[in-house]
Amino acid sequence: MYVYEICPYCMDQLYERKQPIDDVVVNYCPRCGSKMECACLGEQRIDDTIYKIILNDVSIPNLGDKKNKFIKTLMRVGGFDLEEAQGIYRTENTLIFEGNVSETYVNMNLLEDFVPDIHYTVIPQFPFESLLNPFISICPICGNDTVSRTEEVNNRPDDVKSGIYCETCNDWIMFTICSKSQVDDTKYCVEVSLEGINSEVKKKVMHILDSLCNKKLKGNSIIVLDRAQNIEDLLSILEAYSISYAINPPYPHKIPKLNPTYKNKWTEEEVRELIKANPGLKITADELNALN
Ligand SMILES: [Zn+2]
Ligand SMILES: [Zn+2]
Image (cartoon, rainbow, N blue to C red):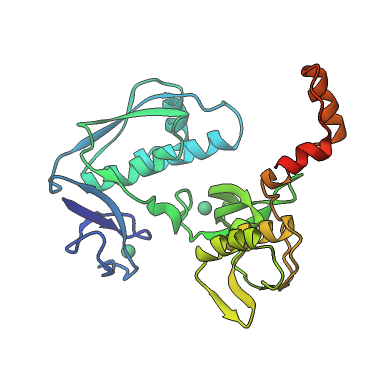
């Protein structure tokens, strides 16, 4: 197995990594000294094969940002001017690039951003498996450094858009929408007193605490220090059973509701329905609840 690295700044050449992929050793770019990133791996050593990239078809809407972005990418991949790139955009099965393995790798990465709206073929078949997207630290359009960014999402107060952004192009390189608690790195300190808690509930609380790392026992209290995402289950159970606790700093996120299986109480209304469905059944809500 051969592992190849690339400098995310120079983005010019694949370098064979001497160490195994999971080794902690970091290699630096011989040209600019930046930290290299693992780019691809394969069963064979890179050679001087020349690869061709054929752009088979494009189904990007003919208007808007995405088209402009793709035209710019096409100019960069094939060294075309604007007019040539626009012509290629409208022509099926066009040869857009021919070059060595490193250049092919870089160009495939640029094109991958537009899949599945475009379809392209590499001839001969590219023999390496691409790893991390090396464009995380530089913008594939303008080549400037990217930043990580988090912003609010319209009409979704509990969610954020989070990802890698280019401040020069004012555009996202990649992003996901996730809950605010998932990206919150604050360490919250939760203190729960276990005194007087029903033993069944205590078992459930302890079960959750088992999976948390940063906790300690102080007298009859448990103190947990962890990220929002990790303490969410604990908070859910504390809220569900109305167990009082202290949290610092105050928790700003919505605490998910615990699946209320334990609250399986029959209401008078439900019992009326039940009796209607089972004529002759004589039972009250209190009696049913006593069975649980
Ligand atoms: Zn470099
Ligand atoms: Zn940019």
